[in-house]
Image (cartoon, rainbow, N blue to C red):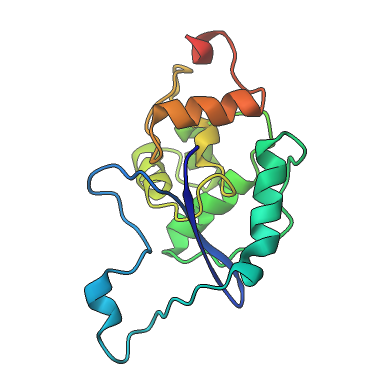
Length: 166
């Protein structure tokens, strides 16, 4: 998967981002210019020991020993985004859903494009499993980490089938 960037608050994991980012993709990572400005709402401190529980569970996931994460999440977004991200958390390991399925789950049956945008803004990759969302025709589409990583995550979870594997 490559290097990952993790950020947490006292409430839980706030971000899990791939080091390689697609052009225009949003990030929680601070711009060095912003760190010089006094009174910023977000302050980053390196704290490897504070991140250890997150790192341990992710390592277990990547070697196939973990199917669910137990740590707290601090999901920050609009009400609609958070509703979409909660719907993603309901997708079982090893299964996929379509954007239309998620739209129905959040009470917006015609809102599959809005669901796609909410997935695009998901700040907690892998743990909030937007990689488990596929197109209505069963093919892989759109993923912030790139389709190759989406495919690898679905392979790890045993969720690739005929159309998806093509």
